[in-house]
Image 1: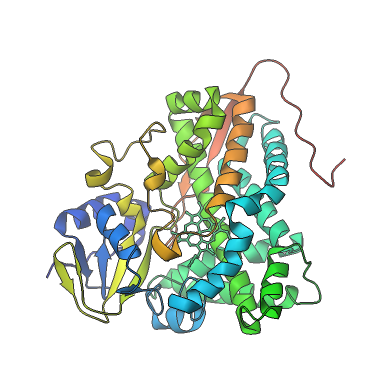
Image 2: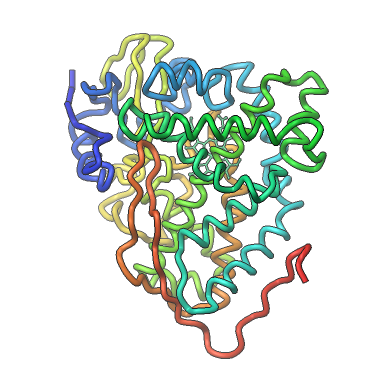
Length: 406
Ligand code: HEM
């Protein structure tokens, strides 16, 4: 049985997990991580196969690495449910997040991106993470119907929620109270009385009234919306800007035709640096992963971050950023199968809007210093990434007017 005592969640590996992922891919299709009691699945084809077999590999009680997170934090949520219950919860989210549902907020998101990019470029220098964070928080708070005063609780709580999915270490212990505080805040602010009809939460309460879901599902769904939508998109978008600043030839391709290349640029960044590096599944029956036989009741840890670097799938240049790579959107950073990310259209809309606004104004992006990575049990990306922009000659485009601004 392939086994390792690799400390996957220690700082040194979190800072640069790719050598460890390479070792895992080389060792076997499934490798037992003795410190955590789970099987690491690190190759693209195996991660995809597990995600697409929810009968054998369930999400209920299998997403996180501690019983407390599985049985209390995640129990009954869309992410941690299977079968009919998952379908019912997912249907409510899908109506609000489907590509056609983006037609409504699309113009406002593009205007917000244009406005934020214009403001960020006033001094010629900006922080890619701060830009992405302002973009994503503004969008999510508006769509949820949450006041701006809740922003800090939301930001801290959303990141903490993912830390709680990891092993019981210091990061996990620090995160537990922050994640609980966010849920309390959602309970306080998202009541029937103060939720507006046109918001995501308005739609959740409508589904409760129609008998599609229970009243007790409302706040867990709110939590799924905010936890899933914030850090993931902030980290993915900031990583994309960092890659474009590091690779001037790639930026040039995008800048010359942003309509064509913005989405490949975003997906290629997600392939290279998956914002969610791993999540679990529980075996509901014995199963085979690439020739390794696992028993019912075992847990697997799916390494999306490793799948994106798997040379078997992406070739010899798997570690390079190349926006012309064929089908970069086939990465697994959004998952796959029935739990495939419900918010892809919204993440793409925000990324496309920011990249196009940058392309309209800058001829060159340059990193001022090495971006500072975050150390997190699940998430990967940067805490800050200072960028200097060379502005296009001539007058800058006037920012698109945002609704509600003069
Ligand atoms: C770059 C940005 C994003 C990344 C990398 C990402 C990644 C993921 C991944 C990997 C999963 C699958 C989890 C699993 O396999 O169990 C997932 C699920 C999910 N995502 Fe995203 N996500 C992003 C943006 C968003 C946004 C903007 C939303 C909007 C609300 C969102 C909502 C969700 C929801 C609700 C689920 C659970 C789906 C289910 O269990 O059926 N995500 N996401």
